[in-house]
Length: 57
Image 1 (spheres, helix red, strand yellow):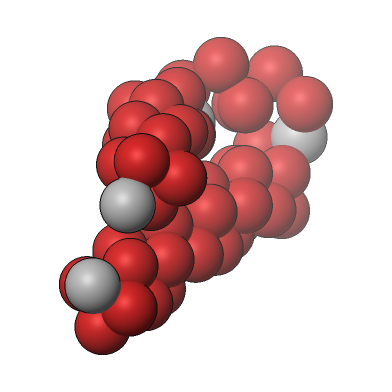
Image 2 (image 1 turned 30 degrees about the vertical axis):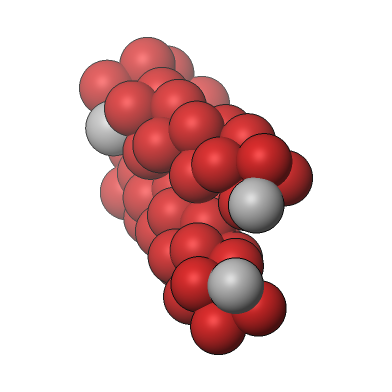
């Protein structure tokens, strides 16, 4: 059970890092207006779902 929760936790961290990275890249490219086009919303949703699964374990 600990191995599974460890893997899920790592996946959640990857979601979070990629969401933050997408926001930073968009900021560097086009400024604040470009944030609206960032795929950070589905990434954050994936992070939240993964984190909830991790909590459930």
